[in-house]
Amino acid sequence: MGIFKATGKVYKPAPEVNLGSDSDEFYIHPEVKAPRVAGLLVKIFVWILELPIIGPIVLYILKKDNLIHKLVSFAEIPESPVFTSAQNWEDIPEQNVSLTKPELSPVERVREVMNCLPASLESTLTGEFSSGFKRWTIRDFHRAYATGEASPLMVAMRFLSAVKECSGPKLNMAFFISHNADDILKQAEESSLRYQQGNPISALDGVLVAIKDEIDCMPYPTTGGTKWLHKQRGCKGDAACVKQLRACGAILVGKTNMHELGAGTSGINPHYGSTRNPYNTNRVSGGSSSGSAAVVCAGLCPVALGVDGGGSVRMPAALCGVVGFKPTSGRLSNSGVLPLNWTVGMPGILAATVEDALIVYAAICNQPLQGQPIYSQPELNFPLLETTHTMSNIKFAKYDKWFNDCTEDIRNCCDQALQLLNRHYGWKTVNVTVPEIEEMRLAHYVTIGSECTASLYKLLENVKNTEIGWDARVALSVYGSFSSQDYINAQRIRNRQMYFHKEIFKMADVIVTPTTGVTAYPLQNDALESGELDYINGAALVRFSIAGNFLGLPAITVMVGYDQAGLPIGLQFIGRPWSEATLLHLAFAIQAVCSKSYTKPMVFYDLLKKV
Image (cartoon, rainbow, N blue to C red; front, side, top):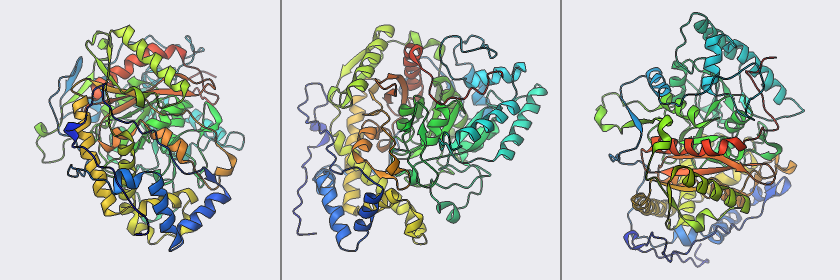
């Protein structure tokens, strides 16, 4: 490619970069130079990319025009590379927490975390929602089962009826890739019997939980949203997080739809249907954990599991108006999760409420490895949510140029929510600069693409191109074009960003941003069978998500309002490593001040309401 002249950015040493509000750092708004293509156009584009000589030239030009060459490939970066997002454990005190013993079982952790939740009024399951729209929580289901107002079997039957309805031609929501009615009813019968005998396993006993089809869960194949992957990689048992949920008595209701190979942000899947947003069925649900976010939004499950490699839990959670929680890298086990991007991806939780996210988090926390000393594991704290209002001196780091790089509706809504939070609790916002954000996004893209290529290399040798979706073929072509130089420089940028964020956390407890730069955009008919390439909306969706994955930081999103079209808006908190308890406190606080404005989605199923 010597015919092209390549020049790269020369980076200052990280300690010389000013992180204060008076920094002269130039903020780069992503100017993505790639038109939206779908239908016939995307097929033509794939044909061009896969040509022997022309394809590599086109890819070279695309990477050059979109600043990958300047900011990553040919940049001069003084730092050495860091090849993992693993974070060292630092003993940073957290306020208002309960320190958990590391040897507790999932059931014991769930029992312990129930004591950390605030008191709640008894629900009236026989009537309408008394104070506007709400989704039934884990505690609502547990209480209904314990009092006999409902049973797991009754709820499971209503769930199956709802899935049949929303999968029909009238709605075609495409929530699930697979579900097994016999298996679901069997689990529900066993749970109902435990309640009848007065011996439920835990508060999760009988609670419906959906699993993204990137996570092993028996008796289902793990497709990764493809038509071929499960044929080459059989599912031989439950993933670690699924095993822990099953041990708590949860009813595992099937595998949710996802963007093929997790290689997109829309949730459009040409093989299994495009997951529609319950707030507006003509809008995308976000991806790649599209089905998991949508089933929680639609009331089919109070919680679901996703996988977050580049905001893939938090983005669809924000677009569907639910809680999306990604703990610190290493806090949850990756065992049994498709190894598509092992240094940036991990399981995450989608939930109706922050309390539900906390309960599931308690159930699936990573156990110390066999033979590994307990003291080498980070401390596990659970937040005492009833005392959130007494927390003092909380500081939010806000980078105005970045925070404001979103639609006007999102900017105004998130800013108002942050101001409301500060007034209500007496907390403060500190203005900072988060340097090189676009550089970090591109470095993460190179990393996740390179890891996906490496993980699928052998498997793809036996797969025909016709078995892969058109948009996924484009992604794989781009991923395969990254060189060792691209990858090494991306890891140098990871090192810089770890330094920057560590310094910012000396000034504040968390970084606050909108979760996405746009709300759910239209689902267009020409994309349903071919998928689509919409890198402009894609870049807007991932704009605030990357640090959580590339740097292994914990992050959570909570809905704080709606745009003028009635579509949900999420606010995100990014925390220092291992500070999940603090993040959950802050998420609970913003939920408390914003929940009165929640409205009901267009597609919603009330599984506890009496007929």
